[in-house]
Amino acid sequence: MLSHSEIGIDLGTANILIYTEQKGIVLNEPSVVAIDVTTKEVVAVGNEAKLMIGKTPQNIMPIRPLKDGVIADYDVTAQMLKAFLKKTSKIIGTSLRKPTIVVCTPSGSTSVERRAIHNAVASYGAKNVHLIEEPVAAAIGADLPVDEPIANVIVDIGGGTSEVGIISFGGVVSCNAVRVGGDKFDEEIIQYIRKKYNVLVGERTAENIKIEIGNADPDHEETKTDVRGRDMVTGLPKTVEISSKEIHSAISESLEQILEAIRATLENCPPELSGDIVDHGIVLTGGGALLNGLQQWLAKKIIVPVHIAPNPLESVAIGTGRAVKMISKLQKAAR
Image (cartoon, rainbow, N blue to C red; front, top):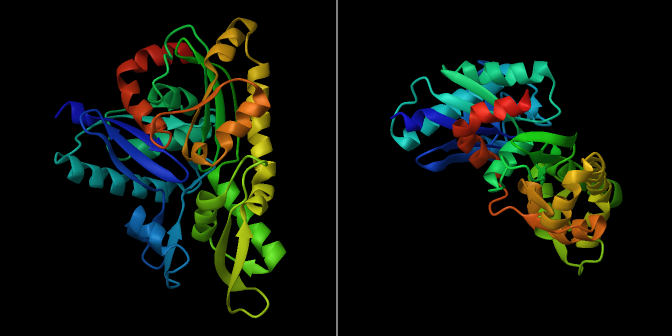
């Protein structure tokens, strides 16, 4: 019972993951809540709510309460967390009584944003709530030796933000965050198709295009796919063919912003740690790390080895769960 009451939560813009020590990742669902506007009641959360996006009657509204990695709608986030924690206790078969919860926060978040995250989690009845920075959690989850005096460079490309951190001795030596991530890529794909083809596509279609033919490397082999949307002139459904080169040009500006954040972080790195970076390179985590061609493109641009974490989507959640045991050490380093 005791070990189940220690939980790690990755409160992501796109997905929420919950980790328990005994069972590992027990929940991985989209951070979406469907709410009945008239009664203010939660109709569905997670996968169920995501399927409703763009397909609901007027009284039901799917909401993504987290924006850019921080809480945009406090009440809805608290309700969503309660629903997810209830689901977790059903999955693990025991009730979570006064758990100790570790939650990760974006490294650039303000004290007000951190307090909102703390309160939303504490409202479930947690005994202790600890916040740790996302790059540290990602590094722990990617099996990097964070408590040793070596430079561990982590690039966590999430749904709302991309964070670059250099971690040594359990603390962040240098870090940068840009509010660019998977959601921004989707948005740019929607805008591009709208401007060029006069066709309107939804978020889920844009995400599927990105996964299927999105590529970060300008020199990749071109592939094409058919995209269905609504013609903005006639209002009727329309199918257009789109190539991976077009998608690359749509998202290239955002990719450059991520590259700039990596460069800025490496420039601020103490010279003693620079040698480690040349030897060990950088590690990519987060859903964005799975974008085709990203590893090759970054390696060409920053001329150090680029690795993808063993489980990029789950690194942060695994790290927050494991951090329960290291929390006092990590908090000393953060002071």
